[in-house]
Length: 89
Image 1 (tube, rainbow, N blue to C red):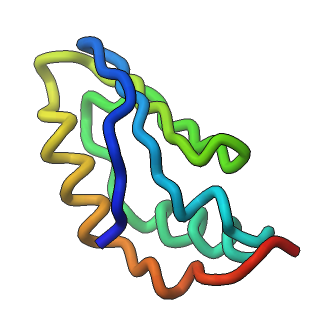
Image 2: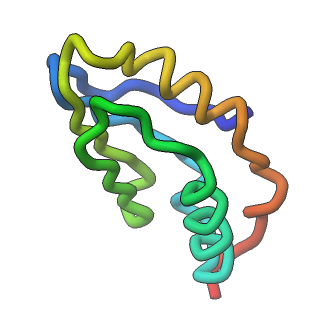
């Protein structure tokens, strides 16, 4: 499971800290992107923007169409963090 912390949340937008993405190499970021592309994005998610420089992810969504906290829990438990280990390229 990936560890994360909610930094800011208002209905329709949530920013979470995901520390492990801050230390990913370029190849690790590409591997993570490939794995994320296999996870279906449910109705209600508008945009997911990772920021590897700050180690955070911003998700914009349609409030009332999705339980964003449950979605984040599901994604974090389905990711295989060991595949992304490594330093910067």
